[in-house]
Length: 163
Length: 163
Image (cartoon, rainbow over all chains, first blue to last red; front, side):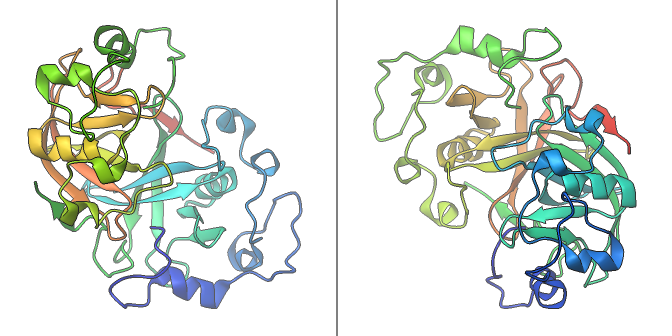
């Protein structure tokens, strides 16, 4: 979910978010604590220090973040079991996902938070968040509104590879 | 799937593979082309240059490898739709997965190829390999023999996180 610009020439939801919801360069950062909802437009453009996240320390200590303070989050549709996409979360994105019930990611390309569907309306209502055996991958089950993929496809995995 | 050693104290399949199948330091590398099957025990311990992989160039050019020449591979069980694990592939691991039908990964911690089930018998017989919309994530559907997780659990996502 990290391409800067789609090969399809379509305008992806993610780009519209940049246009509509790009944070102010002067947005205040209060120890990485950023108000949710409308306040999300005031998100910092720099990734907060995981130590400054509001994620429950009991949860944070179970995660093995990569060198960038991120873990991949596999997104699976509740009910159908369809794997929709993979995105990335830092500690604060995980905190927001757990506490708001709306899937929230960290965009590595834009270096900002990304509330799935905030512009497109294609929200992901979180049903569960699970951590893998070695703490370095999340599995998020969601009720998907509309298409999960910026191309308009329901999921991002529509290209089959064959030898 | 990258912890050096499990917190459970159990001996993971991946470690047994190091013991049983650690490649020879002097194993010959013929432009990254390594024989499969028994020959897999002669795998190089260094990651081959993606350009030297035998992966079909038409497939390789569609992938957006990370800075380490890898992409995450989500592994989903055919039929049940259960997400079993996440592992990593380089170009040669993807080539072997596509051409042998046995899920083969690149272990970032051991810096060697890892044919799932080669020691444990918990093979993953590949049913399909799909690429996501921006070419940086794979979805591999498999028929899983036995447990996918080194802990003995059927899948690696048995810890639920709650705010």
